[in-house]
Length: 99
Image (tube, rainbow, N blue to C red):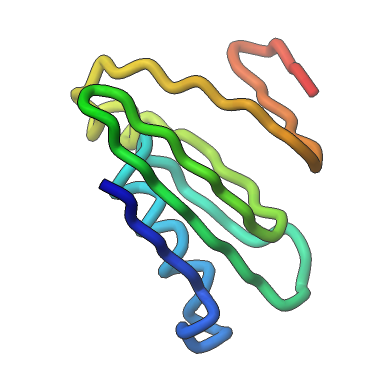
């Protein structure tokens, strides 16, 4: 099954909130906020193949932060693997940083 989501049909001032809620619906909960005061756009194509899900995510810059309440809200023990084709990301955990 393939699902498509796009922010272009959402009012600009509501796009980030819509996107963060969408991401939290399918992936681990996190607080998200815009990094730049520029127009925001995002698309998600999600393909479910049995127990495996493959997603193609394209979006403007955001900062996600997993807070303690986010960790408590997730009961899943799923494994999430991310592979970036372009752009840049920085991950930080327990004082360790990977770019």
